Length: 223
Image (cartoon, rainbow, N blue to C red; front, top):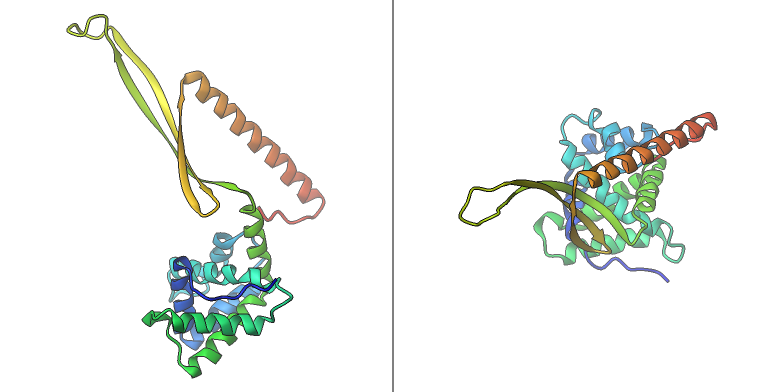
C-alpha cells in the first residue's frame, strides 16, 4: 500500500531546508562528490567522503542533508507510487508546514524536486541508506552507555570511623525501542567488568575473522 508524505518530521527539516537553499554550484559539488564516493556503510561514512569536497559546508550540514535524503529512500522501493509523486507530496507538505525555511515558490518546487531526484538516484546514496536501514531493522538498538563507579563506606557503628569501603559500578545503557528512547541500569562488580571485557573482546575477534573472510572473497564490508 502506498504511503503518502503529509508532514515533515522535525529531524529532517534542517536537511530539506539546506537542499532548498543551496547555491547551484554548491549543490553540484555535493552531488558530484556523492557520485564519485565509494560504497559506504551508512550516513556518517558517506558524509566523510563528501566533506572534503565541499569546503563551504560544515560536516553537520552535510549529515543533515544525507539524513533527510535517507529518510526518503523508503519511498524508492514503493512500486505503487512514482518517485515524482512522492517528491510532489513532499513539496506540498513543506509548504503546508508553515515553516519559513521550508516554504517553496512554484519555481522553487521544480528545482527542489529535481535536486532530490538526482540525489536519490545516486548509487552510493541508495546503498548506504539501505545499509543504514538494515542496521536499525531491530526492535531495540543501542544508543550509548556510561559506567559510574561508587565507593560506599562500611560502618561497624554509625558514630565510628568507617571500617573500609566497597567499590561498585553502575552501568547505564541507553537504547531506542521503536521511536522511544529508554535506559536501564545494572550494578556490576570487578568480576562482572572482567566478564564484559572478555565478551567484547570475543565479539571483536569474531568480527575481525569475518572481515578477513569477506576480504578473501572480495565482498565489500559495509558495516
